[in-house]
Image 1 (cartoon, one colour):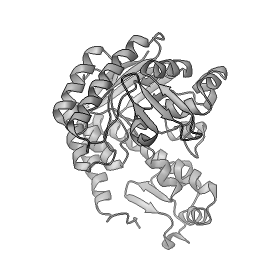
Image 2: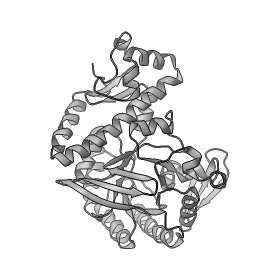
Image 3: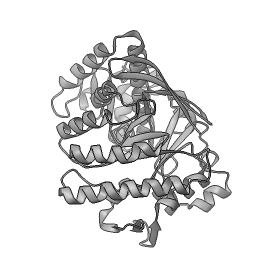
Image 4: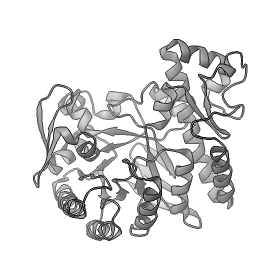
Length: 374
């Protein structure tokens, strides 16, 4: 089981400590995404060197490949993927949204047709809890129904009711008390439904609470409005997780609201495509201006990539399609995200968080669209 303690505050922003069986997670924290048991292009050793304390994986994808029994037979997910730190697994609720054409939702659960081979799988709330117990993860998310903000109100209301019912069934099904469970607040962009969802979930006594159904295609202003409204509905003594949020400026904005945990594929996906994050903005390393640039991506960065390679070399790898490009670029980006969260924690303690937030916002606002820095 986990323990969580808020240790410092600066307005609504807070520094916390999440104790798990596999180590301490200092919050606010960014969780690199290892959907199928691997963060793309980065070894567990690299993740540790970058400062990662917790990694996210996904029940739905691991259930399909290689299967829960296989991972259990090989010692659980930590040993299987060679990751010694904390692990959180998403339940598959997001796949209800992202694989909607392959999913049928009912009170019982979700029937998926595998995107791999077309096979049929029933995923019930109880199954999700059992799978996460077999995987041996530290934090499990309950099965929820994620719907986009654009759905009719009656559809969103039905999803809230189903999410609450599934949450209660998940708690009833838990036999392994070492597995911490997080409830997930849904409700699309409807404040009243968000309030209803939170009011139904919080008395259940989950170890933490997440806000789902955002950053799934809605206007960013809607994302901020709903996130700002919902944070006040969640218990202050539990970790609060805003799912799927990833731009650096957004991370700091949501830290300012009081959220503690975040995840997104943006650092590695952008890395594979030659986009690198720095404190001064994004560097588009494919740009011809970097062909003979001897500088590291960021002279202030202490990551392995910046300590050993030039922008010119990274451009060469990216332009030739060498797989090392994605590895080195992703190492830098993940390090940047983790360092940004470390800086946020330090700034909250020092009372200078607003200065850090303004600095990063100004750097990225100077860029137009996807323009890169010099």
